[in-house]
Length: 470
Image: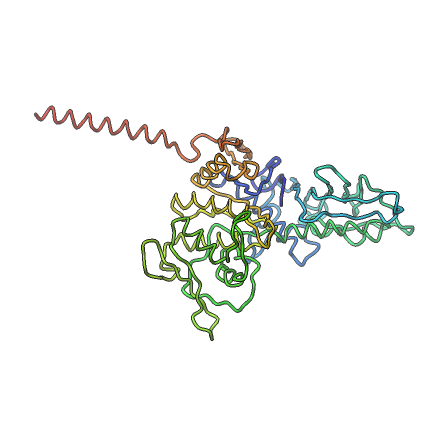
């Protein structure tokens, strides 16, 4: 789970400042304020980690990628090639990372362990080519309960010919042979094999590479525009990794997870995924019943049937309201994702009426509290939203003690001044936000007041016309 994030010189952000992440992390802001860029940056890093090209510092994306960010000049702040993109993040490990310095005697210590990793890096255009990217430096810190156990990183040599390794709380011992330069890094984060070959006791650096890859493999993304519903879905028995960037694998995920059972909280009964989906859609006031049926035993085609509220008839998914087909991928992704997942979503509330948007906040609370096979799922939600109804329901649940304010963090992209700043919203234990930007969700009281004034003026004019005519 991500604990902290900071991004500098990326798209509209000169500096986001330190973003404290929580199980539910919300980002608000006006259109084109840059709030979507935060999720896009994380997805670009994920694309890079999963790219087969180990030398690609960043993979901005292609035709079938979650994000397509173009060239470095198109993604760097103010499109200035002189700017360097810097970033840092901290995440908790699902299992404690532990290793020993092989050059230390068994009784002399040299054991290092941690449950949190902190990573920072800086990327720039190469001075020589002006179009290839290079990593200026990167650094890992291993922490046990926020106390540093050690740190190690690669830093660009002063002569700009390769890198040197530097460590704190750990003594790297060079092998007795002719020295050679560490020429490259792996993508934006990885120690190359030369580091292990160069030092007698540097095997552990590969563990950091692996933890980085595990982190980004746990990230899933669902965009704001989901695919339209279809009457029939083909499924050949394959288990998809996720519902897809546009929800294209939603029905396949439901079918693949029919044997899974999930608890919506401690000591609550475990239910099949399909039953949970029906329950949540019902609680949102969207349907009465939901099921996925095979067309026949001989075919690999399925249909999604819905019975809407106050109706006795079952209808196909395309024949229901558009909002149901748009929110279904959201619900499936939330409960389908494996334990330890980080789910990035843009506008999950899109096409939902206000009461359903409010109920969606309760669904997200259920997601972060959910359990499977007797253990917490530890799901983290990173949500970009415009919904005041969604936020106000979370505020209410915090006040009611349903969820702790420590499990919710919220930020507002303020474009009042340039460059844009990311303002943390101060939520207290009663759900109050002490520094919410004025009138962001509209001036409701102002509209009510002006409506009342206009009504009074209209009645006065009508009274005056009646008096004159009489």
